[in-house]
Amino acid sequence: LNSSYDSYRNTRDTVALTRDLEVAFDCEAGNYTLIYEIRDKRTDLYVNKKINLEFASDFAHGWYVVKDVNGETDIDFVYPDSTVRDNAFSRINRRKLKGEALKIEYQASGYRQEITNPDGTVTTKQVAALFVFSKEDLGILNATDLTVYKNYDDFFYDIPQKRTPQNFMKVGTRDLALINGGQLYLLYGMAKNVGKMSLPMVGDYDLADGMVAHRNKGMMVFDQKSRSFLYSNGFNTTSLVKFPDKKLQDGSWAVSANGLDADLITLQPRNTPSLTQPSLAYALMQKRNREEYYLADIRFDGGYPFTSFDTLSNSYQVAKADVFATHQVASCIYFASGSTLKAHIVSRDNSLPVSVREKELKSFP
Image (cartoon, rainbow, N blue to C red; front, side, top):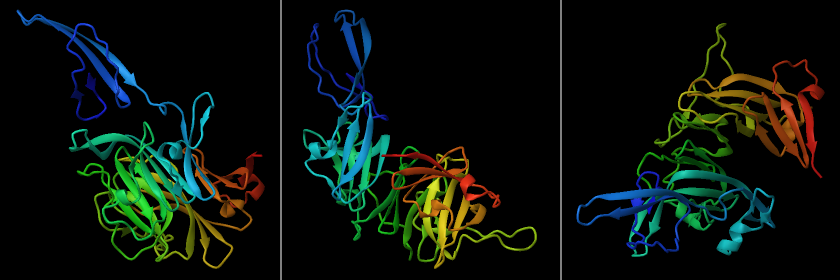
């Protein structure tokens, strides 16, 4: 039985040496090749036949839904026929995550996890993982059966004093980024590792929740102390750097990304991070001590980040929303307050009335 479970190292096990094969397989979910071989011991001639096998788990097809009930986080699994497996995480692990639900991310392969073998030895495998975060806790899970690979304390070499996850992002196939307690943690997937976060980026800063990823330039974040946008300039780095300012053709200076007179409301990515193309995003900010708002159209590639920086009046409901999302093609921000989903059209034409730029899309019961 030849296993391609480890995407970088195939492993082969002999399951039988008899002519008739009658064996019950107990394998991890993944793709396998069953190889039958007949060999003439006298001439050493042989013939073989290969059959592809796929072992699937109970969570092979469907949707993970992270939720919170009474201040604790759990996971439901919804099957394609709409059948729901309620509280799948807590039923398997006999506990929930403390705190309100924050985020869930899936990594199809390449997450490095130390596995204890039956003989007591420990090996590092590259596995599929599910990252589940609440506002007070986290769990790194085996994506095939929802058992726990790592708890909060296991995810760090130096456990943070503040147990307050704010945001998490998987970038590309293996790089990871986490904001916890106002600090940025990075895991560079190409380096040798066992799936743990090392020390946070050094410096005197306190990050807001939002971040934008670029495969080469790392993570773009907003520091609430200096009220500045910063970036990590890669994933194998130790400190955050400032964005450059931009001088316009008339000799004046464009709005700086440093020392803004505003607080960040939300920073929303608009496209999938690339190695060669800029990352796009919208940043919605509130002017300090005033009911005025800024909307920045962002192009993140290490250069000056703003393609536009416009003022919004307090007539726009997007600035007061609870939930935000963006479209990868359309220039709009989806937002929700309560049970109503709306869209804000991003436009530099200030003559457009609010009723044109903001539309209700759907109201849920």
